[in-house]
Amino acid sequence: DAGVTQSPTHLIKTRGQHVTLRCSPISGHKSVSWYQQVLGQGPQFIFQYYEKEERGRGNFPDRFSARQFPNYSSELNVNALLLGDSALYLCASSAAEGPFSYEQYFGPGTRLTVT
Amino acid sequence: GQNIDQPTEMTATEGAIVQINCTYQTSGFNGLFWYQQHAGEAPTFLSYNVLDGLEEKGRFSSFLSRSKGYSYLLLKELQMKDSASYLCAGSGYNKLIFGAGTRLAVHP
Image 1 (spheres, chains in turn yellow, cyan):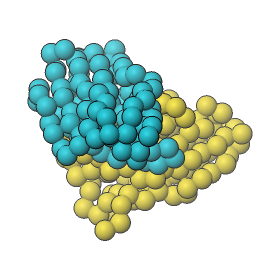
Image 2: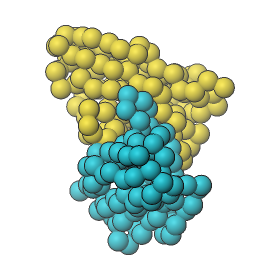
Image 3: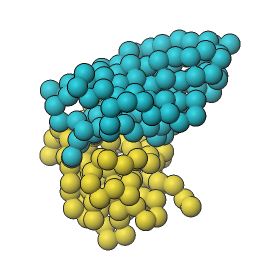
C-alpha cells in the first residue's frame, strides 16, 4: 500500500504570493493533519481534519487555511506569503476518529522556500 | 503553557545505551509520543504512552510519569543508523505539541 503522498516536493515562491500544498492519506485513513517544520525545530501543528471537518487548529494566522475532500485528501493554502513561511510542510494521516490518540504516518513533506 | 523540553544534542557510542529525557507541563496532555526523524526525512512513529510506566518495543523503550510531566526514550544496543533526531510530542484532545527534538549522534 502506498504511504502518505504530498505534492509538490519542492516549491519556490515570492513574498505576497499564495501557495497550495496537497496531501493524500494512506488508504482507509480519514484523518489528516498538517505541520510546519522550520529547520532545527520540531513540527508545529497547523490543522487537523477528520471526515472533512476541522477538528483542531494550531496557533497560526488566518493566512493559513485547509480543507479535506470527500476522498480524504487535503489541501493546505497559505496566502500573502512571508519569508518566515519558508519551511518543510508535513502532512500526516491516521485512522483516528479522535484527533491525537493514534499513531500518525507522515508524508515526505513539501519544502517551501519564500524569497 | 504547554512547553515540551528535551536536550538539544546527545552523543553515544555504538553498542551502548542512551536515555533521552523529555519534560512537559502536565495541563492538557493525556499522552506522549516519540518519533524518530532522520535528516531530510519525515518523522516515523516509535512509541505512544498514555499510562504511567514503561513500554518496551525491541531495542526501544519509552517511559511516562504523568504526575511528574516526565518521559524518556531508552535506546539499547545502539547502532550507527540510530543517529537521528528524536522528537517528543504531547497529545491532547485537539492538539499535538512537539518538542524541538534531540539530535543523537552515534559514534563507532
